Image 1: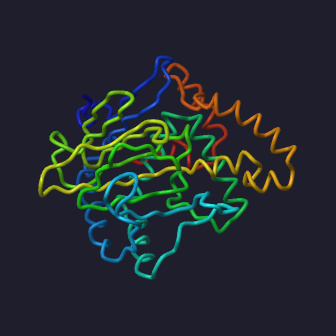
Image 2: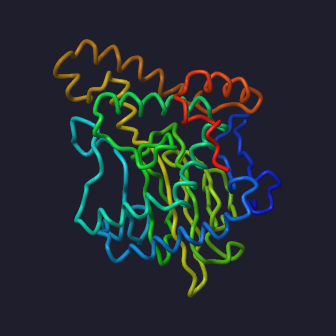
Image 3: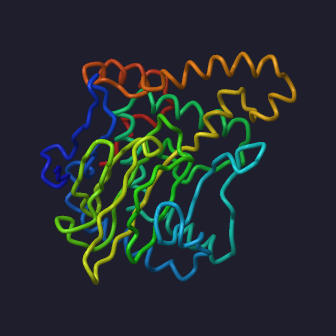
Length: 308
């Protein structure tokens, strides 16, 4: 069992047999004494705006708790990437208050920075996908300027605990960044279970974990009566990445307009998906990957924008 709270650097890696970093226990922003109070403030703002939110269905594949999206994605039969539903005026007000919250913004920046320094190849690819999507449609809005991720999801309480699942909408080789929030004893509950890896991880409020949530089955253990738990995640749609790989076109549209090109791209994509494990950096290659990523990424997205 790993406890994020006691790691000297606040970060620890879970690697495969080839020494690739598959899961990153990112911990908390370094040298930030105010972080515990900011984590409590993040939890409070979710509680405060909850009455305004037009919640998505409370019961879903991940569990039985309400949630709200922000940002842009692809899929669901759409031809183009699109922003999340605006919702009612109250819903938009709630989303704006959450996205403007200082602690939420710092957590988003930390999630992105932790991705950049622990998965530079993945970060660089997501950065390009998101940048090209924004150039294609300037109306697309990321939830946070200082983050590479195009989507954020806020999971509300009182007990946002997931059942065993995989996040099928996430890009298969991509990380989902998860920050736990709430008021609970993390030594007694709220642990993250990663089933294929046979890991049970203590997950304190205010801490962040990065994992390939589309590949690994994961869930949470229950918390105690009277306790509360929420979470905040950032991620990227697999359909958005595939749309980018098809030359900013859906599979259906490309097949209709240029079936020969689609056939060729499918053959290339089949090879790429099989080799997608290469997006996960090996620890011995991490510094070289990081230097290459820093050289090509947009200013303000890279690790030099590390929060705190």
